[in-house]
Image 1 (cartoon, rainbow, N blue to C red):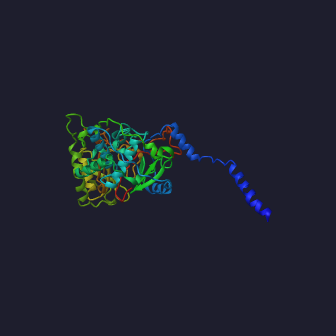
Image 2: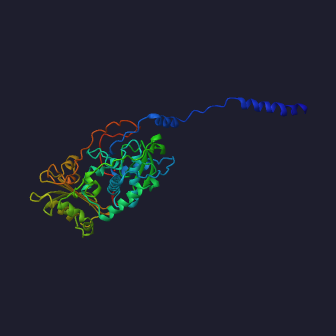
Length: 425
């Protein structure tokens, strides 16, 4: 027994002391942590590429988006953004932000708050311009380079209603005064679930608001510390929204004028959808409506193709569109001058490029556009000119920052905007 007690009082403490003096193993840092530290140490911010998407049908795009999982990492709310510029800069920032909200999300308060949060997240991030207007209208001078496509696809040809614009401005003022829309966290990118941008697999999907999916960069550039930059001073003047915003007019400049045809079209948007609908079926293909010949109908009766009558005028084509789209909450008219029209549905890419006139309205969100091919029919107001949609043969290589980017041979640039439930930037 004395031997047992000796082991307990002498041997066990000695064993414990020996274990304590051993060198404990040092665990190697996780590869992700190393990458994050390397980014923070001095790597440039990621490149910001144009919004380019796969040319996929809606059902396939929905399936692809559903297969991309949400990030398991935390999605913290962004810190409040409080605008620090002067009175003039604040007025310009409010109207730029309101324009992004209403043209991207329509007259929808929840969607507008989400858009506003993404814009302000970008203002704080070193990969983007330092001002609100700079972020919203980034790339507006390039046909396929704009970040918010309403700024370069002709959407500004329509004017939101007074009540909708007033609400958008109030939402913008609140966001610039520190109100946070928490569900989208630090998202810097988003798209609707019926399109698949080529960058969607290289960013973390963090949230869904309605039909919109929100993303942030992976690694350190998507973490809260990366969003530490304050807004810059000197909000730029954006003449393209001078029709909406007095803050974006030069001193003494009067509001921009617009043609009577487009002004009438915008004013009548609600009335058009409320009118009795004309029964238009396949039996009417080949017949003349409002001086032009119906040549095709998209299955489902949303899109109508016309060959414009030789004796019709450019402004009379608006009447044609209103006649066809009366009573239809979702309606599109595509029209060609005589001799250039397709034989029926569907038109080819080349025929779409040669289209002479286009009209679309989505009554549920107040979207309405009336556009002409200004290479064929010059217009006094440039915003009435349709953007020539030239498919991109290949996606330009990213200048860095976005690993694992999806590629495909053909893409097209599209506008991200909410649509009615019957349909799907």
